[in-house]
Length: 392
Image (cartoon, rainbow, N blue to C red):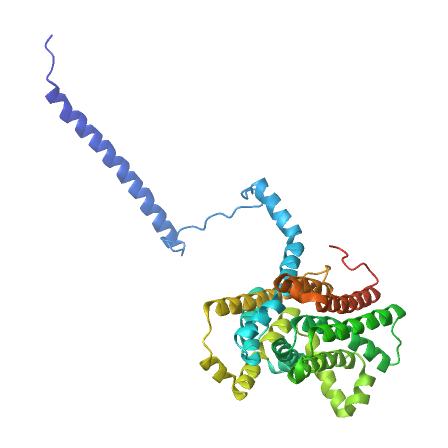
């Protein structure tokens, strides 16, 4: 038997495969066009892709258990982390701001430079409502007090000893609150009176050991106290209509009550933001009116001076931002719990920088800080009837 040549078989096989492929492609094309025509006849877009099916709860992708554990740990420790950053930033702010003031002796411009980044951080980390006429009426009293206190604080840092400034800032609110209670006919508790006496003794000793701050330093400290007194008076007036009428009169009482109602509608984040940002521009304008711009032009800052200024601004902004975060945490230790305690951290930072030079003035300032912090914390316990760090 003779074998057929392979050349005669190959063309026939190739033609058969081509015919099969063409038939399959024709059928696929016919099916595709049939689907397109069916969609077009039904009034649908024939070329629109169907929506992808969404994952149901049972079809959802599972999360790595290790990531879930890390998330729970971070969520549970959020309060501690924010509190640690708040205390750290608050502790370093006075001594860094004192160094920045020595490098550039312009209280108004320094206050503006510290307020501006703080407002930026608050804008980024808090929910800020748009500024309206009603919101401006509600925030005006608090913003005015804040502007006076910030400007006086930087003036006091320039003309007075930083330890005296820290002691004054921590002790003065408790002393003024006790004076307000006496004005309203309420006698402070015995333990408050004892702490007030020790704090006054500490302030006097701090003046004797640290040196007299001079006229501008005294005016700056008194300006801060006036701002705090106005803030306490505003808190008392907006809660007691009779007291508002006796102090402001009928017309002033109506204006104060309207402002208090507008302030009550403002969220905590918006209140913190506008309390920081609104005073910034008026303080800057005051600085240029006081010819502080000439000091900026004539003074050439060195690299260490600029570094210290940037550190001071960063700490101030971090303290404002973390303080606002603490105020927004529900059912937890609030900012007013840590603010008096941070006074000890401020003194520790000052002693760490000044060393032996701090001397007895640091001990005297610590006595005033301890008395002021003790009065504030005791008053918080009396108001809340619960431990200071409950739910922490």
